[in-house]
Length: 436
Image (tube, rainbow, N blue to C red; front, side, top):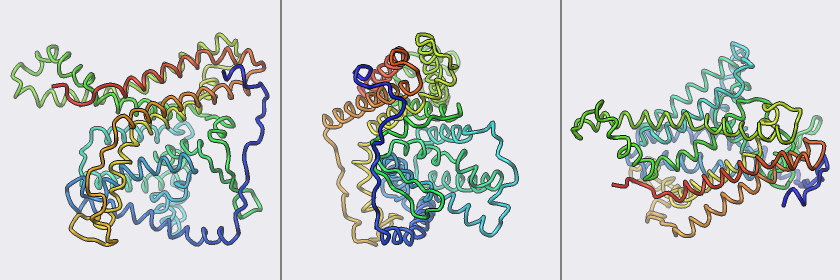
């Protein structure tokens, strides 16, 4: 359908609308901005403090809900739809900028950032973050320890290579939210000589058609986002659990023994190694599959561009799938646990306080309708993949000289999107939990 209805013009019509923002509102926002930055740092410090000194119950401590549900999930979706506010609300960058005011050399860094590193530090940190999310100790204390260690790490790294370089290439949440915000409805543009930003409301995903990554490391980051979300759904399924504990168990008995009581600790260690190996291998598998389809696209379209150039050109067409996967897997958690931040805010340490008189709100468990969740997940994944097909075809029309060549190039991409769709829906349909 896209191949038939979309035309082959190189430039798209301007579908953005500039908003006229009153100067009083701009001045108000500027006066509030320092307070928001201070609030961002305060929330980081509060998350660390509540983990060390607060309630040990994960559901009764502020830091678990705020970090994992409000920041990692809800705030990510806000940035994806409204723009990258994290670029000036990043608490670690705010702390680094504060140090830089007193020590000018800290802001510049001791060394030049190696160009060959590109976004690889953020990619590695992202995979480490996913490992902690899936397999790390899920307690308020461990979260505070992770946050404190990550804070020290960011401050040291920024001092070594410079704050601007580190928070552009190395800090994982900066790269994650920068990518997802490319799909936002709102776009801010600051021009030289104009202190007031121009704010536009634009068609969703339009910026994905107007740019592409120049580094393989950024493509790798996108594929890691895609693969890790799929793995998160897969590794909790009965199929996954049964494969190791039932199907592979007989082959492991010569190494761990047949006595289940003495073998269990060894099997738990092997299971963690098994899962970690797959977590690392799956992005590589996605990388190979993606490049394989790109190579087929290059062959049938007779493109003079290299496979690497084509792979980078179509990389952003994967982002709607990433967002759809993320939303479909995690939005029920925002619905059920995210609302509880209202009561936890009144008693962040879980010691009986009631600061905002909301400590008793939303205490009862919230159980969403299973059919509603399934149909929402189904709709999100299908819609995300349709948007990816649309974006990829738009990008092809701007890249190739003829509509026929663009159409031929998209046949392998269409098959790839269908494969991702089927895989995503299959993972969502798998029964969860221990089959025993």
